Image (cartoon, rainbow, N blue to C red; front, side):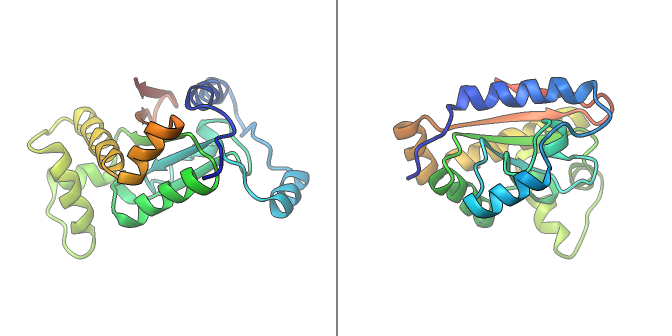
Length: 190
């Protein structure tokens, strides 16, 4: 286990401050310089938070949190649903990179949530919508359904034996949030 570089509370404060800067910016204020690319290539990554979010092209965690190269360990999947691959990625980042905060970042107007509520897709998309339906039940309201889906993913993460151990032994924190597409604001569920 790599010791956490900063606490979960410090990571959360950085995310909140980054989102405040993002709300007033026109460009990403995170460090994406040649120097940081070279440093992270030589020294490795040093993310302060794990972000599990949707594949939606309008949801850009590095921009939303004014982060640069090496700041966030981002896991993206349509509908921000959890399976063994995502859980393995989270455990890796917590154990080997020293990340002390896992943030499940959902968003409103999610196409995958809409598909679960209003459509009956086939193919592999059905695996995503079936997982979302487990989370939202009969909920039809977009905002409420997205929040329920975030909470469901958080519960799955917290059911991981390794995550429970890291929470107990090292203070790892798992929490949810919802990104509002129109305003750019992140609503943290504390």
